[in-house]
Length: 200
Image (cartoon, rainbow, N blue to C red):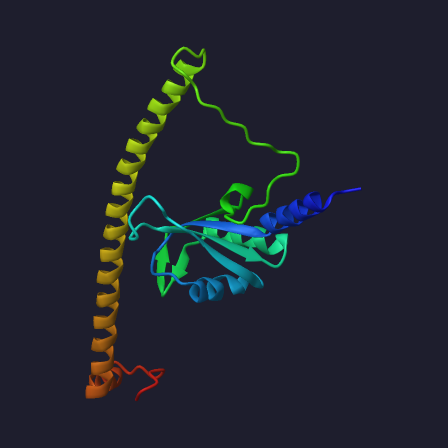
């Protein structure tokens, strides 16, 4: 018979299988915006943002979106992987994949798992291994800082490009509205005998 800890952990794993991890999401996105975007695939049960403890707040965010069942989760992953994800009318190059247990801050303890640690002295046989791991961690930290800088530059470039596109579209619509309001469009329709023109 399963223990209460095993039952709780199995329920947690079911929740993991219903959850999608979304990366590269704009910091301007809110839980209602995300819920509205993913409700087209099914019922969104919960939206959880993954805190960014190390980088600046302008970095793209990661978010966990819990759906009602696994079929909806697979539909989200399949669609977002093939089509651009729209946020506030603008496409975002987000990535979607199945969530993993380590992504959850409220992850319960795995039954039967214990964590042990000990201090290592310089004369310990594992001291050199620990020192190499420490150097590797510093190297990864430096590489991560470099990649975060590039990521911010790409995000800023995309933001400027989208802003310019929005301004261009707005000017086009203003010009079209002015042509209709001034009657120029109707005159051109009459000149070229456009019978299907709706504003004649």
